[in-house]
Image (cartoon, rainbow, N blue to C red; front, side, top):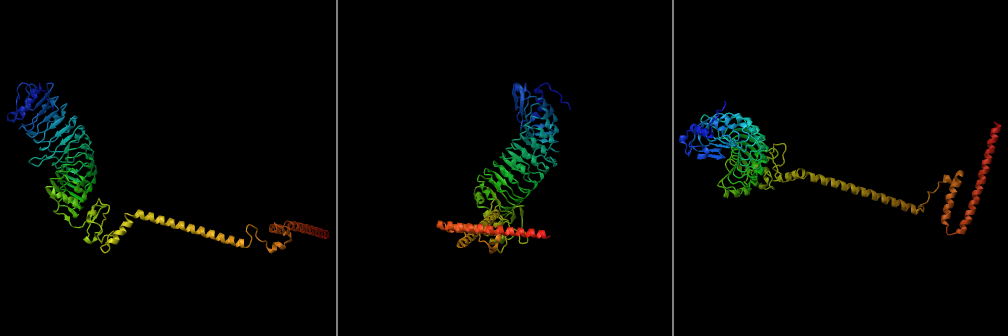
Length: 526
């Protein structure tokens, strides 16, 4: 519908006065006299003769919101919460050119949030909480790129109408959101969008409690590391393990509440390091198991509520945590837990298994059974195929697990080193034996007087007439070496040797000549 133009800002505010029963307002100073800026009407702020802000919070307004408020072209804020305004939210209110703040909550508004909310591109805060709105949150809300705070929680009327459907993942695109995301008590369904982890500037509150949300907590939610005031997921249908990434919210101070869900498995020790927590830390009414991390003893600033009841925690409460009981007013831990009972937890799958107290290794102190301790050893039932500890020999089983488990790499290194050492010793022994054998052979040759000489000739070579010259030459050389100090004798023996050699040559020549004549005679006869 086309919005009817009004002549002045005074006319627009006068119409608001009439539509919300201005006569019954608690404060209405100067209203309807002169003009809003000149007469300084109650709750109206002006700049350069233009209305820039209207604040009528908690002033007993009764009636409806007029669409003509969108014509206040310089208005940056409209604050009318904590009244008794009924009817629907005017579509045109989001088309105001400069509106930054819309506080419409804690009224009796009905209907839905118009999809036109995405047109208020400069909007920084939208509050429609604690009303009787229904329907779903439009995905167009993700287009409010400057939105720092979104409050739509606690919407329910006497007939049980309230928001439904899933939380739009488009909300995760509002990277400017730096204050609070309040979607509590609206009966949203489905899973928590992992995209909400992109709201990394969020500092005050992340509140999704009292809905019908299911599934697990996305690990991406741990990126909300600047969150300091409130983190509430209580009273939903959430399940699975509590992600350790939530421990990145190291500035958390006031309220951390995961109670009344269906969480299971070990509670992460990282969350126990919220040293700034002062107000309430509540994880009661879940299915959490295992020992309480000793790191939770670092919450030394806690003074109000610390509640872990109605879970399945086991072992003894760590001494560091017991010390907190003297300073915290509401310190609750015993109800429906299994403190004093030994823990039997498979830390790899976060699943509890049955076991007996005798299956816990006696050489491991109870404080070291926390999942964050490197000495924590999982145990299983005797009927389970993969048994690490047996009740009759817990000490031997523990040492065996240490050798083939945490010290497996060290054992391999020792075995390889030992093998290499043995190989080196064998090589040294082999070369030593070779050296000894060579020395023995040298000694034998030295004893025969033949070191550095030629081997003795065989008898067949000596008797072979064709090899006399080859045999006699080494013999003469040996005689020459033995008689080097007797030069005269050597010369005489050398001359006689030459004579014998010439005689042998003559005999060989004669024999050759005879053989040739014999061959010629045989040929002539043929």
